[in-house]
Image (tube, rainbow, N blue to C red):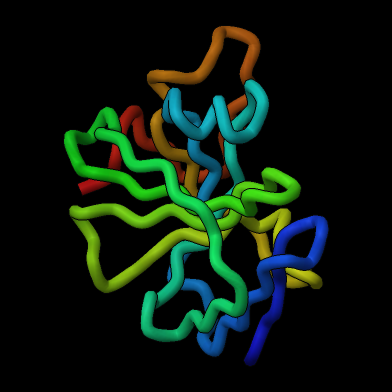
Length: 134
C-alpha cells in the first residue's frame, strides 16, 4: 500500500511505498517537545521506501539513547515530519499526523514511559518500555 503525506503548508510532500514496521507512542523528552508536551505518535518505516519532494530543514541532537538523531521539519510552517537515528540506519520515523490518511494506523507500543509526566495516561493494553526497546 502506498501512503502520502506532508507538511501543513504543502511545501514538503512524501510518499511511503511500504507498510509501517511499527506504530509507537514515544514519551522521550525530545518527542514531548515536538508533540507540545504529549507523546509523539510515530510509524517506523524502511528508509528506502520513503521519497521526499521539497527540502526539509534538520535539527541534529543526541537522544537519551545516546544515538545521534536528525529531526526534519518544514522551514515554512514548522510541521515536524521525520526522525532518523544513527542507531538504526535502515529505518526512519514518520510523524503520523503528517499522513494524508492515517486509516489503519494503530499504536501497539509505548516507549520511554519513564520520561512521561505523572499525568500521562499509558494505555495498559499496549506493550510498554521504560526506555528505548532493545
